[in-house]
Image 1 (tube, each protein chain N blue to C red):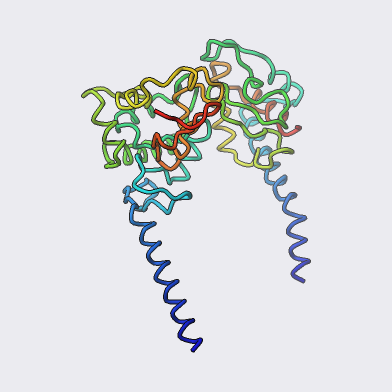
Image 2 (cartoon, rainbow over the protein chains, first blue to last red; image 1 turned 180 degrees about the horizontal axis):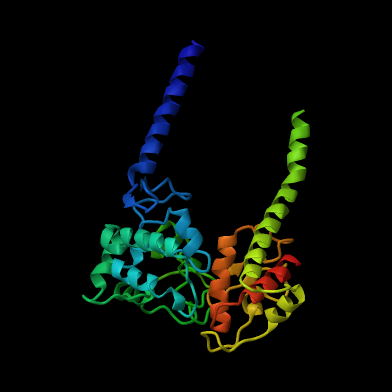
Length: 199
Length: 134
């Protein structure tokens, strides 16, 4: 009698696991070549959430290590390819800092950024950012793209510029609690010193 | 037997790290000597560490202290982004001085940012001696 109960339990567990595994990968995007020489699926996220990320999250450790050492590792999908090319050709004056890298690294980074740029992505925010940019423009500040400006319109100075824990719109991760996962939902915004964002 | 192996590994691991650091720093110092530098000095490196420069690309005068602080055992802070910079002293951060490419990259960037020019081999050698002495 006990044997069939055990088999049923095992079967139920197996079915449950496969259902959840399926759900976990259901929203994976094939974001194409990362420049690491292989096609990679977005791996199962550290924290669970429903729906696709607004921007394809960064999986490349090489990019994170190099371009996330001084500031948030902005997802390549936040700017068009031409903007990234502009940034990469001006690293000796990178927003007031020197961010030069050797030739090999520069080539790799440019390739990675262009291949994963907003032009190459169907993530919803990438598409919106791209479509908002005037033809011929190549903005190098993510925070000056028209879509970004629109989305952050009306936020009081006390929340950002005059907030010592935020200071600038460039520090996405200080308010967007899952920015590192490519999730910029306004429902998940928590402003330091102020609390959850309510529109 | 297994315990002996584990203990040996645990005891020699820190030694390995400092040997790696010593080797990398020595190689770089040899390279700087080969390009004309003479007699490196930690004291000289320490003096230059705190000396402010207005030649860099900034409205504010800068020195190494601006981001790395006077005490290399403490964490520093990026002057623009506020990002934490792990301690430079190998005694506080065993990762330091173990990667020659990394060291050269940051010398290139930071000397230009601070002094508006690359550091000379002499200066780099003095800085290395200063950092490894902390």
